[in-house]
Image (cartoon, rainbow, N blue to C red):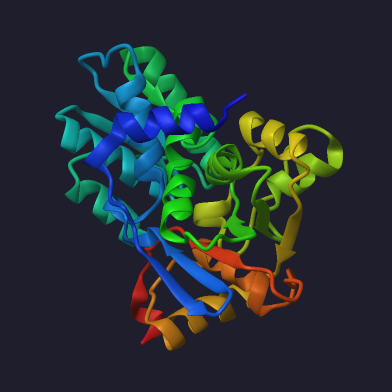
Length: 303
């Protein structure tokens, strides 16, 4: 099982290739971790860089990834910085802003299917046929460990301490890293859209299961099945999962823009929606960090 030692090793490995993202205190006991300012616009750059650097070698065909958008952007960015080729499979429902950015980063982009699961199957086939290094978007030990470096930064950036971190969950690569870095000293809470709740369903069933995927945050949180690593860690540490509906996500995203001028994805806003909708109610004095994890959105609807 991934633990703090793996996260520390990842921090050493990726070093200055990723940004140390800022923390914004928005209330006496509430902070935002502004990971949307990371290279390529999301936390996934940490895990993707670590995953590639930890591989024994990268074949001439380079890397291949499947993504709703952000993991592909992270793969494209990491490949460009490391001087290797990247092929990214995304569903046809991927936001145009993400697809366009993939091209700008130099990746070869192929759109397949209407869900991440279909793009994933195509990427696996491509890797088998070309011998490219397949980089999983979330269910990979090195991806998880790299994502967990956010937790190490938080421990340094909030020296007075914090009690809880709210984390938006799709396949679970981010929350798995946060659990590995912070549990059991810090309470990690999963926040999922009610219409795309793979980890919530897995915890209820006792194992990862397929779930239907829909809603405003499906492009970034629309995993049909939670990753095994995330499930194992969440189950072992008794991680709670709260659900938020689409309207709560839309409202939270608008509030992040109106009050803080943070333009984020709907999936990112899900974590904040847990607070604004009352899905998660801190006890008096509880110190809460909201992980703001991705900025790859079309901001025209925020104007």
